Image 1 (cartoon, chains in turn blue, purple):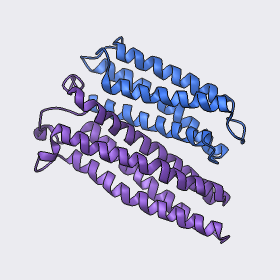
Image 2 (cartoon, rainbow over the protein chains, first blue to last red):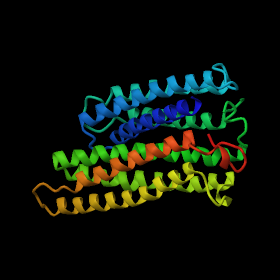
Image 3 (cartoon, helix red, strand yellow):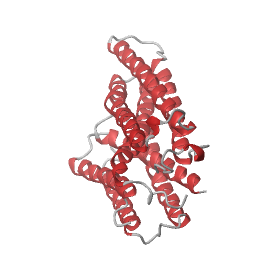
Image 4 (spheres, rainbow over the protein chains, first blue to last red):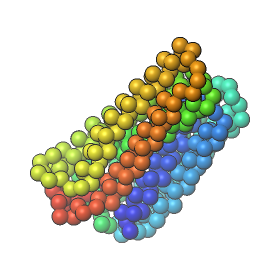
Length: 128
Length: 167
């Protein structure tokens, strides 16, 4: 059970990264196309939901982990902050075909950095 | 089973972090390459084709290098390189990454040839971007299989060198 949950947790992370890479390509100026952008946005949201659901399920399934552990709470805060920041950035370029505004690009990269930090938190598990 | 992190030495964390980051970035950039190659096939845009080639050379290949380099590093830390017959999940991981490199090189060459033809103004229905997208889709499937093997570690219980798990 634990291995299956870990697989689904990481598969969701891969889906999230696929969405994040697609949005990053758009921010970098690639001609992603409106249809593909919608798909990448769906991957970003679906992956984020899966990461949270299977992550919490894993924490409840493993005896040594608790949902109130500092590193798990840190992960949930980073997850929520990254989602909010990327969503704010996306609002300014979702319906346009031109260059992504500088402020939106900055917000997007802050969101990407938060996701990488979240991965580091998962591996190092500070205060565990 | 319930003490996955507690038994992992601290000095394994950096190679493990790089390995997971490389794997996730590889799958992410492969998805971008597929979308751009399919887009280039549909709209016959040289710019989209150029972006697809860039996603392969500046996104997929560096991610693969991080994934493969950190795999060797963590395998060395865990002692798998000293085992005569490593378990199946190690073999699946190496097969997926090494075969993956061939697929990445082949799809990059196809994308480059397609871009060269498009720049030369050749028209018609060039199948090269579609073939490249197909090869990359196959690579995504291989990576998902490797991800399953890495996380579930089938038939590995009797072959652990240090009775430790990586994830």
